[in-house]
Length: 259
Image 1 (cartoon, rainbow, N blue to C red):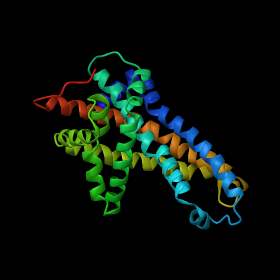
Image 2: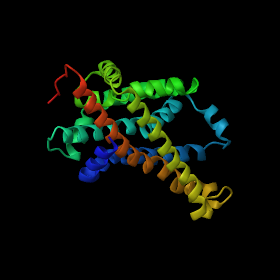
Image 3: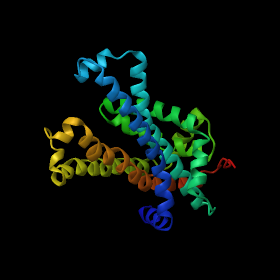
Image 4: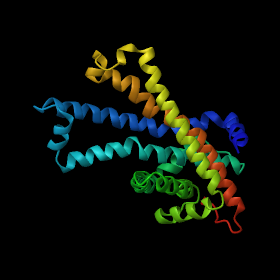
């Protein structure tokens, strides 16, 4: 499986990475606009303590914060994985395609993918809060929900059911991919947190950039949110899609692919 993934990425690595990266580029724009709005709002508050600022927010501002969180975490991850899945699956089928076609396919289902990402994000978070194991199980069984929605044109709940039925055929491999992906992603992010202060001493707490927030945003948030995830999705999204393809091939009755 790893060898197949590497061969595919060697052949189509750049289109796959572009398919993985575009949602994070859009989420960067969302974060930039939100940061400007937030700074303007904070400037008008007498008390700058984060706890007091949160308490001073009404319902709508809190919903806005949650929406921005979704737009910069769960949603780009789902859109990114959906784009990679479509591109890789078409390659497995021997069909010519492009990053633009993958983006178009995903954008045609962005609302369903967004709602799915919110539901799974909340449920998986609760699962991890309950001694981790439930979160791993939920995340594993939902691994093929986005590909099923994008590739087979399944509906909201049908995509979850489809994922469960396919993951059962490849459960241990899918679980291993998720655990390895989490370990690699966390390792890369820890590397950023460790090596950035060594390369840029001005990013250490108490320095001017951190105090103004500029250094923190540029040196930490950018690689943690907008560099590491696209690489991780390009790599592990490819592996998961190949497992999804193999699971479909293993089925006796395979549902037709939407045109």
